[in-house]
Length: 338
Ligand code: EPU
Image (cartoon, rainbow, N blue to C red; front, side):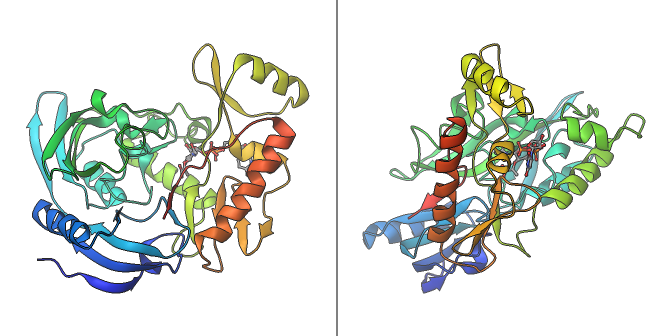
């Protein structure tokens, strides 16, 4: 039986450093302990919250229930052919350590996703992405435990219904499954993805950059723009980049010639939310103790380690101001509890 700790302060377990207190906390290392934790919550009639690295959640206030931290470890090479390997990884593994492990073993594809905070099991939920790559392109399948029945189920890539910062686990199956392992299909031959302009520029002087060089460039860009959560509490991007249609874009582009956008398909465009927030005058500003990061306006920080409420109040003011100025709604990117 895992150890259930009452009245537990979560400050060190969420990268926004919110000092929220959970009624109970438990760390689980395998499916059996996970089932015991879920049964404990059920028996006490408590809600539960699953925690990986705690790098994409906003704790609005104390959590009146059981927080379950997934700590399962393990990597297994489950198949291989001439071109690819299939690597099955436990949900509790640290994401960046996995990226380093794949590079050290010459398994390629994840290098653009270097230094993203968080755990392997959380990566598919929001389909983490950076510098032209999304994790969905490397997931062949995953296993998840159905909370209601305790039964372990496999999901193919297709059945995860991945989208931009989205999956079935944020939509119709929200809070119904716990991802317990992810199987990645990785390439044996390097094929660097330099589609992201800032990354291409950073590597312009390097001839045929290796995946290791790509990883190093991504790390350097991230370190320059994004605050280290260990020093300045944050959860990365606080909003998704909004997707708008061609009519909306032509109206905005006429009014704001410098607007930053990326084509999604023929009819849709993704706007850089950072640009909208910056242009609305928010970069470097603070309200009620929460702040907009001076190097990246999409990142909100919590330097005073306040409850999530304070950061959400700033987020709401930003949403209102971007809507008033540009007519564009910004959607929150992290998940909010309770
Ligand atoms: N920009 C501004 N002002 C700023 C920051 C950026 O005008 O303060 C402009 C830049 O000129 C740039 C554009 O906005 O042209 C986009 O900025 P950036 O390249 O930093 O990327 P982003 O669209 O803001 C997204 C992801 C990040 C990811 C980067 C790199 C989302 C919600 N965010 O940010 O992901 O690292 O691209 O691929 O899609 C995260 O999800 O937590 C995250 C950090």
